[in-house]
Length: 329
Image (cartoon, rainbow, N blue to C red; front, top):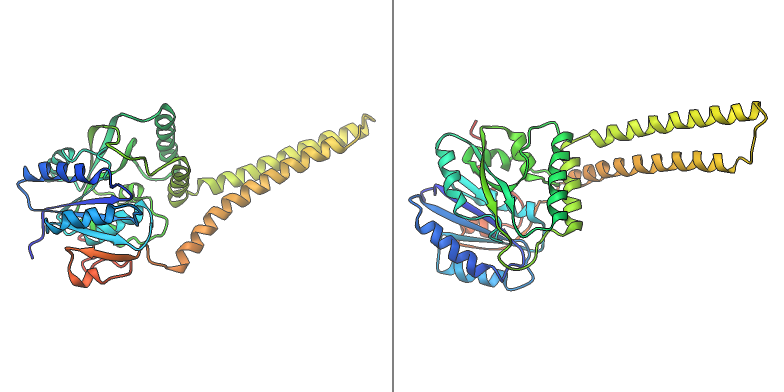
């Protein structure tokens, strides 16, 4: 079967209120495409009518492919599953909430035709988000750029186009805690930004509340930076200097006969040492925990059902990518 030029990967989780409009927008956009295409929907263990609705629209459009997980494995695992199955020469990742307009893909394809391997969407304006969300997101991207040893563009999500050779290189990377946008930056290749205005969510609720955003931020930092470990070292040295200074002051007070009940000094010293130890233990625990997850070598996701995919893949229940996994360097 001839390989399509464009593959759209759309991870979905509990989006029954959006699927009808998403389908309409996709049809309007793809109808104008001069290229062959496929759409790979990845249902990330939805608990509403999302799986049934995806199967309904895929039943009448064979170029719609559906991958359904056995449970919720997370957004990054869903993206990984889509890339494992995508067959296009150019692969685009976009969310289902219509905050990443399908029409921007046309400009991405133009940049890809010009020779860029990665074309990422960069948000110029973010509508429908609170000031807290915008401020914390901006701070996170700038902090991450400072901490990690690779050049990562600011104000970008997972909305991007990748060439075939980038996708094949991504398939070779099977780490458990996945921060896809940083992995793409780590791979290198020629990359280019496309500016777009990010509209507010069409319907439903965000799937990244503050708790998940914090976990996502920790994954991003610990996956690509050892700076927190070095900060622990510097914190330990600082605590040691404070302890030495406190000891010197206590010794001077004793010699000068200015001794006072020592409970305050003891409590301060113990508090400083204990806090430093707890912080260092917590940081070490984050990294050790990730080592623990990696050495188990569990699959990144488990597929329960597929639709409009080859039978050899539809029966798969593991996280292994398809056979064509060798990077084209």
